[in-house]
Length: 374
Ligand SMILES: *Cc1c(COP(=O)(O)O)cnc(C)c1O
Image 1 (cartoon, rainbow, N blue to C red):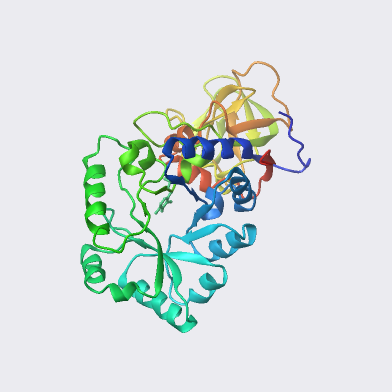
Image 2: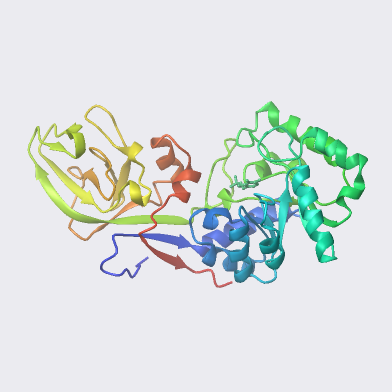
């Protein structure tokens, strides 16, 4: 795979849109007859909603979840036909934008239900909405008391077109966790009190818990982008993202020489150190710093692992390439994320998760998109 890069680019994020759409199809097959939506919040997990949304739509995806009203407006411009839901719900004052972009807010409390109903009455037509029930995550969602209020006063929902009733799981990555079944039971009990509407409980990990978690629609995000967070076995998806960065210089160190800020790493032998144009401002977490006696992150140089040495700085990392066979030269590209170095592995070394790795990737790297045509 040869990628044409502008000579001045310090790095590149390569997004394989064919892998992305294959992932969506694999998950859609797995959950059929339930519908497979796509969560494209946070600029499609940092990979670029502008490319991701049209590619998924061409593959047959019809329903998209964003977080914010503004993301909803951007998604609508990319796809006039999509069903769009905004997970952050109805932010006070966002009614006009949501109506103009035809984005259905995921309503999570009675104030939002009231405000969206008021907007519908002013407009003189019913407005589309999803209702989120809290089933134990205690983040967003109608409380048990809110659900009872709506059950006792169905008129509160009469101005709305209820497109979806949903909830969100706290522990879906762990199939053995008792909270999964508890939340499913709470969801069933509470949604039975509401007007009947299509139901949704599962995201990337929840859909791996089996058909009883699929309901009418599943809402994966992370797995579409190649993420493997489910601990009960592999999710049937492939990696989508490769990140590569330039070698700026290769220097030779004597035993005892130190590298980087605070001189935390000293060469224990004569060493070759590649200075790479990626730092924490590019999403290479500072937590991947290494010191003498403390391992940090790694990169791949021509397929072989090379450890980060010293502190990760804003724009640069230093990598020990002493054991790399063959020449490492100025201008070469090394791999920060890719085959052999997953976003999960990088997240784990940095004390975080692949989700955070993805959404923080390189705002100043070049971006290249492969495939995605059909
Ligand atoms: C982010 C989010 C999703 C998607 O989660 P993944 O783990 O990325 O699949 C689904 N539903 C809600 C409510 C979310 O906030």
